[in-house]
Length: 107
Image (cartoon, rainbow, N blue to C red; front, side, top):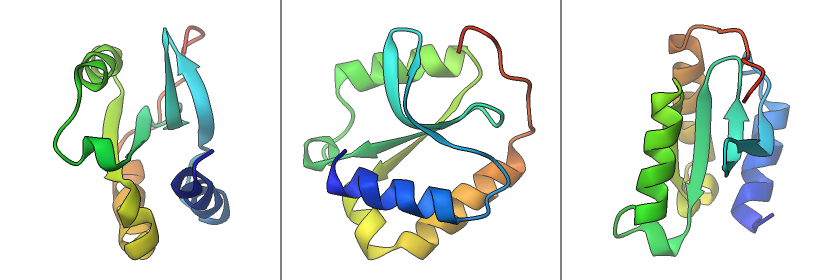
């Protein structure tokens, strides 16, 4: 795990967000950074290479996930270090907004 992934994983595990997150979870042919399967929420950390926009791989992955009912939240690595409380608030809002759904067997 990168340092940002390690910090976010620690935040997600300690926070009471009302859902369980998994890390480095395969969904189809992609491996996502973090996912709440019950809320269908994927969190992708984006390093410096992503600051100028998403690459083709990211767009294809996001389209694949969204077509299967997932919501994808992209977070710049620096936000994990500079605004962790704001990030957790945003994740908490998304978790509350997304209705709990049964986990399909193929996820």
